[in-house]
Length: 325
Image (tube, rainbow, N blue to C red):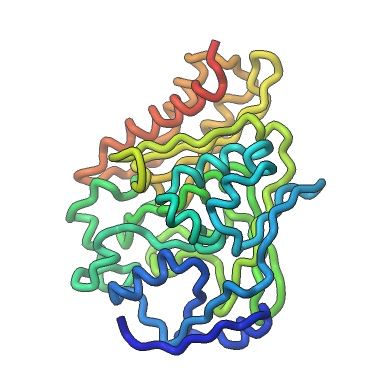
């Protein structure tokens, strides 16, 4: 790890003033420190933001509000989250390990970098790490890589479970930077790789995520998160599904479906949602809707299995949540 400067401001304004193109913000550090040790990230200065007033979990008529510095474990266990948005609690509980969940922040989780091995190996070409160098995964080992939203420049999957749940619920991020405060829907925050995979999101220079707002959605009480992975704990998703259903008797009135582990960003499935609305909550309905989950997929040599896996993951998540008749 290279030497770097270190500061620990106590106000957001001071943190913004100390940030520049060669600095990095430090919250839980569960991603940043790893990448600095590997030489993937080499900031000249680190700005510790843990003393900033970016905490709190509350719920009112505007929805659920979560401060960016809240720890994953605390949010997962909070009664407001568990009761009103179980999909968020479940996504967090299925992330990382208890030790990491007790350290990692909500904002940091949403900004974590891909687990693509080529991105983390500085001896191999990677357009996300070094623009223009090439994508080693296209013709290399790509079993865990994305099948949705890929390009000829990058096929890395987005790693966050929480982001998938928040994508399904139409969450909005609060940001603050040198130019002031702004809000941006999560669906607009993450960028497709295209020809610029190193630009992963809509953050401007020095901007901070200050919080997350999940809109009021009474029927989100009926929501869940299903994660399929190689082992039961401390593993990233091969495919995952965040689902929420509003039922009127045995009829699906509204639906939210997003998937992870298969896309270059958290992937919303509007075609699946439309296929559910107005239909009875039967096994046939869920199977037919889930068959659309891999629309637009571009499988590679080693990850073609994900086209079937994501369909079955969505079908199982819907069936278990909806109580198919």
